[in-house]
Length: 139
Image (cartoon, rainbow, N blue to C red; front, side, top):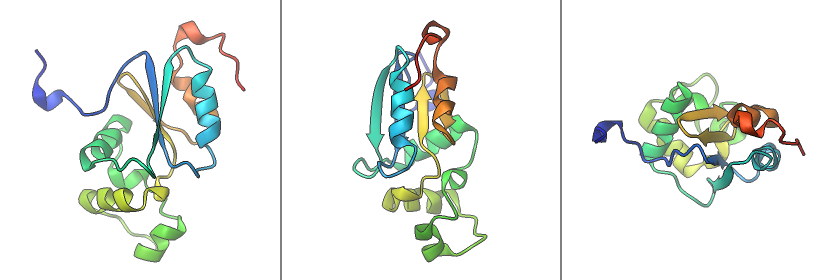
């Protein structure tokens, strides 16, 4: 049996690509299209409508190997209006900000199995495709 401390709240399946993104992010539609080109099922989590818990934000950051503060677009007007430039947030402050102003998520985050990536361009989603989907056609 697994150690409860090692168990996360994010569903992790090799048969599923989950995309966490704000619907207005310029990469959301493109990332979804690339994900659907794989043989995996695709789930879109609209972070504007689905308020993620602090635990989920923390787990996503840990899967990416970064701090929660690092997944925030610090050049976004909503961030600049509240904090200004050159500010580093505590983990708790970063989580609360993402929960209330999800539009500041810097890049869509995609998860497949134990692997997570930040999509800085839509082709980054290809990193989650399995060898059996090498014939996947890009839209």
